[in-house]
Length: 145
Image 1 (cartoon, rainbow, N blue to C red):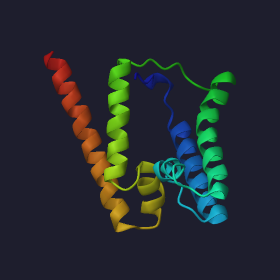
Image 2: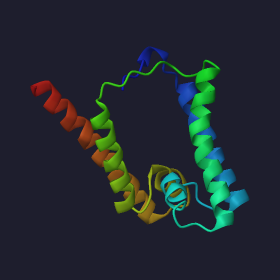
Image 3: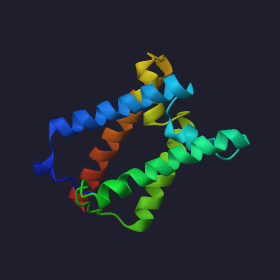
Image 4: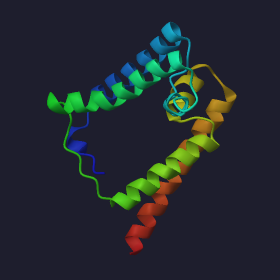
């Protein structure tokens, strides 16, 4: 994926982070649950009937929001420089990682760190370290190819 750095603004990044933080705070205050996407999605498989509705609504909102933003003209153009097979492989690795780490960046990084959870702090540091290592290795191998 290519990012148009000329269109980047710290204000938009701050606003997005603020909205995510407010959503996570509201979710735990009004629903009593951590806003961890992998747990919400994973809970669809074996959730009780009353539990399924809010989970489906949450996932539907995650899908509908960028589609709505695109229709309203708020989404920048995105170019993905990866094959479909590469994207599927990356998605499977992310799924494996969230299973291995008992959660994802939204659960650990946003909600867990806010609660000062040692497990979440370590998990987030691990996510970030391996993300940086992956980018470095990818650039190193692509430069040599």
